[in-house]
Image 1 (cartoon, rainbow, N blue to C red):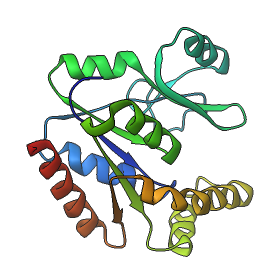
Image 2: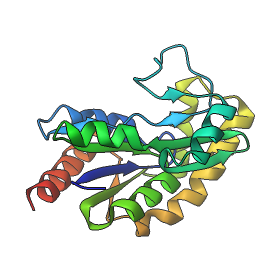
Image 3: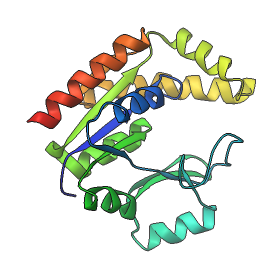
Length: 188
């Protein structure tokens, strides 16, 4: 993969999507890389904008065709991945892809892009704060909330494997810190 890339990863609910949206609005020549997934589309989402929503069969067919830069099965039957054509589309437009991906996906992308990527880990101030944020979304059952918080606890151990960690205890400050890191990286 050529060009520079920005990878933003975090446990679910830590604020990575909000920070990615902030970075996209800052005139940094970034373009959002739309991930593919087999999870069901939420009412507020659009295919090709939030995710490429694929059936499990289609996702597996595209794995076999080597259509993914990286992919993983996050939960049984729940796949996520980065399509090569997405990255190519962005690079051909002369822009830098920005990825909003889970922790494993972020580390996979960092392996692919190497020194050409800045991998940011967005950390919640605490697991309790993360649980409250997820609960406030109103999209989780008690079981799915417990699963996400348990996964987040494991994912926090991955933070040292990223280039930089931004603690999102104050959204405005976290956005400003992430922006400063990205500006510095792209200026190199």
